[in-house]
Length: 461
Image 1 (tube, rainbow, N blue to C red):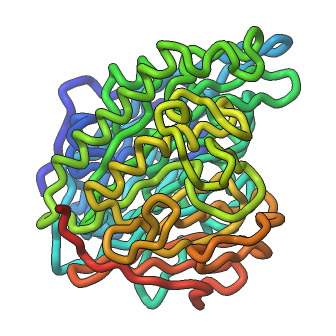
Image 2 (tube, helix red, strand yellow):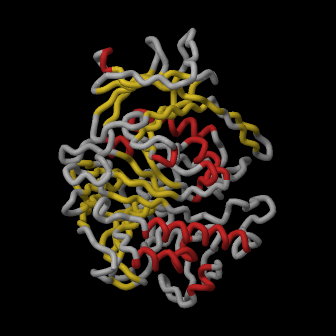
Image 3 (cartoon, rainbow, N blue to C red):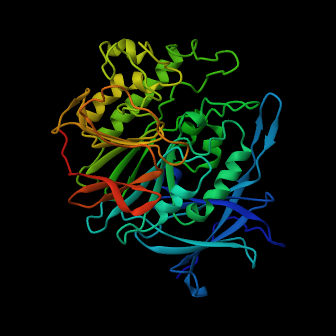
């Protein structure tokens, strides 16, 4: 095959270097890399690093199909009493790859270089191939859940892993990001990852450290957003994967300018003009994105976010009205006026006041979230009521490893169909032209579905 050489000079590699934290991502035209895979990693020096791509398993030298250079950047993080400088973090982009195809790649030259492989997802809109995604949140440092997701289920391998927030629980201790990506390297170097931030990537500090305010997440996770969005800490985006139009929403939009030191509980931030404007910006972007969906190409529309609107765990509940899950005054709720809970730490109740209407209007079928450390599936819901025709199924899949779900609220509503809170595991999405099946698998028995349901293609009004 033809070797593709970039127009810049490749650096000479005089000696072997240490390669670690290898993780793959999915890219699209937003990053000027359609149908692509990003290869991100760290090393012990900042020189550019050669990344080679091979067809198949890469055992035949003639299979070499592309050569790229990974440029690097280091990041300095200041806390009240600590300064941390990250190792050089490199990213290379492998673009215009064939769908549903096996590739191998190598990082660096020589015997000490890193080698791994991956298979690209099905082509967008392909009705002949399955789309298979793993979904999980709140994993902490454990690699066990990702290892289970990497296993084939009914002879079908996961094409991409989606993280619904709370990645490393670094909480401003950025060295934990290094440790976390080292722990996940055996899986993430072979299966690409997409996701969205949770509260621990934005507003939660550990003792002696500052809040991350998105920076650890954005500097480590290759995210298909524009340079302007990155500069303004707007992390929401959408991505077509096979038959699924995936939308990633940021529950913490509006807190970009939050100052932990002077506004501990966000009382001056919540309800401010800047806060409302940023939330409105995401809302308008979301509606425009949903309007543009071609259901003939991607018949399934799925939202991924960190905080769930509907679950029956006692953790992370908030209310805009006296009755739980009801919103009597949407305008006040949208502006962060709660009956219980804080809009700063649990912003999803306020978001629900306007976002749920768009879910229903444009036919979102499933919403995945984490935040609560358990599994739960609802019936199809519209405004706290079961609605089989137009409702949205809400799946809490935060049982990734950061403790168990804990207690449930009194008198759970009838829409709560299944909860699992005593074991760790993750969800898997298996989409075909006829149906989308969603299963939940425990780490202890990754071959047996502990819960399963199906979604049929649905047209919008």
